[in-house]
Amino acid sequence: MLRFGEPILARLLPEDLEKWAGPLIKYTCKSIAISLAWMLQRIISSFHSAVRGGLMCARGVLSYLNKQGFISINHERCDAPQNTYLDELVGALLAFLGFMYQFGLGYTVPFPLNILLFPLTLVEYFLMWMVNS
Image 1 (tube, helix red, strand yellow):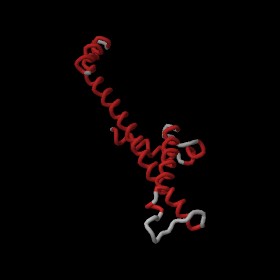
Image 2: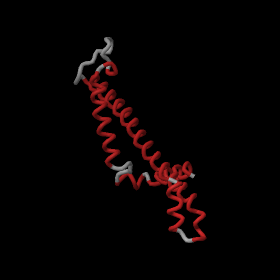
Image 3: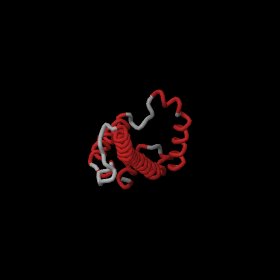
Image 4: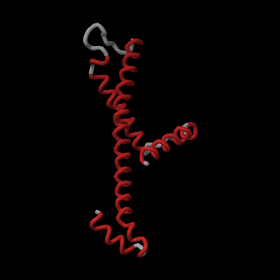
């Protein structure tokens, strides 16, 4: 990129700024790469959180339903909630819904909570800025 882009950018810049064509291209490429890495890491983290949260929620709901007598899971045998396929199925469904909800919002906080959590959003932006600096 630098070999081909520097001469083109140097011709577009005023004569006294031509020396900055190389650093400008390097910094732009690094900024794009860092932004892409942050975006991919956010997607990976949200997927992991969705899978973990979906499975935890499914196991909790199945345990509650078992205690209330709506379903029957024998804990003495090997079909405890974590040994059945039902918790994975419900957990996968919840994980899919949770991931798509987060992805659909663009990883932003929805309206009523964004006002309440605004200080934490500022802390998050500050930490991202510190890591990228």
